[in-house]
Amino acid sequence: MTKTKKNEFRPNDYVVYPAHGVGQIMSIEEQEIAGLKLELFVISFEKDKMTLRVPTHKATEIGMRSLSSPDVVSQAMKTLKGKAKVKRAMWSRRAQEYEQKINSGDLIAIAEVVRDLHRADDQREQSYSERQLYEAALERLTREVAAVSGGDEVAAARQVDEVLGLRAA
Image (cartoon, rainbow, N blue to C red; front, side):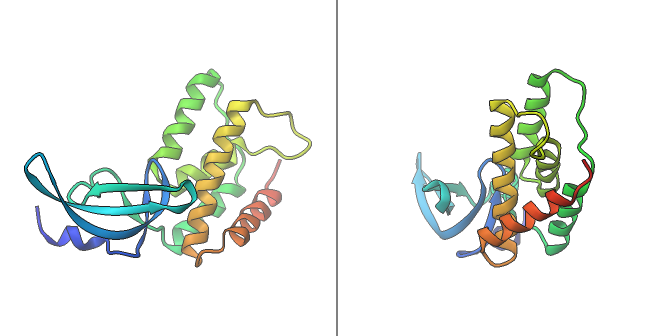
């Protein structure tokens, strides 16, 4: 394993951690754990008032990544415009798939969940669990869009909303 991989992420970088979404690297610290010196990224998820310590050598392996490029963001927006694809599988199985997509940290997959679970005002009610998944996906998408475009979550939410409003019912 090459040493260069480690310095892919630096303090103050915004990163996407699959299970938690967008966070910011506050520092890189060394800790001794069970007699081993470990180098850790200290990542703050401000919105969730949470701090995570991730071993630097494990970061990429667990799917931590840099923010999406503007290209990927526009791809995600295009995905939102598409027609919802809802499989006929049982809800529990679909819910599991949605959750996997949300936790994959993949922006396009997250956009698919938002697209598939989005309801226009005149459509049938969402169940509680549908709404939970929808809101989780929407929040992940919005936060990353905001971080990529410079941090304004309100503007990002408006942008996502507009795109969802345009799509074919």
